[in-house]
Image (cartoon, rainbow, N blue to C red; front, side, top):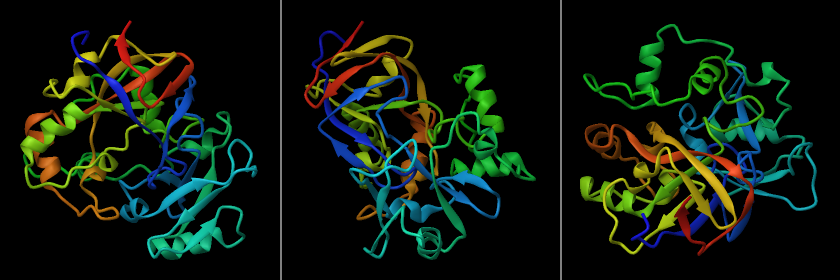
Length: 291
């Protein structure tokens, strides 16, 4: 890694889980990742469970931004742009009805709740056929294997078996996701006709390089500490990818070839999950180094 010049190209946060996000020029990484990342989420009222675009595809055609000077408890209020271009605020008394109509599903919008409110985060209704459910989430065709979950720390995996998200957060599993442009270039060689875009993979940090890196560059960092600006992070594991990478959003069309390529060539992984070991400022252009 020392022979390469890796820098922070883009920083992203996603005010509402599974909606399009906001690009930042700088942030201060904390133990909870990018401040206010995934500060809101929708709950499927039929199952009383927090869900994302794995279940409600049209969430990806919504976007959200925080509203300065507002307070919804742990996070500010948000303004959501709906698929039809209209907007609605989270402090609007009709927010749940408006969002439900836009998504064609009965949902409610929730800010982060305290970690001790475990019932809020709990998966309330287990599927009758767990394997079929997992195969649908990961967009697998007959004969394709499920992702290898053995890299998950046992405590994290155990929590995700019981809760829709780690309690106290709306993350899928970890507070920080890092993706390199090298990996995007590699995937593009495997899917030459696909419209690949960072938006499909929803990292917090996109890493640029001198274009000499090849393959899944960040996968080589797993198990090692990274310094990013003034922060230090630990690269824990590769990130298993689900049906969301194939969903249509904005000008990006639905494209199942992306998943077929990842199943065949990347063990269905792209990007890495990280924990923050030392909080610190991170800005576009900052160098990323080992140690």
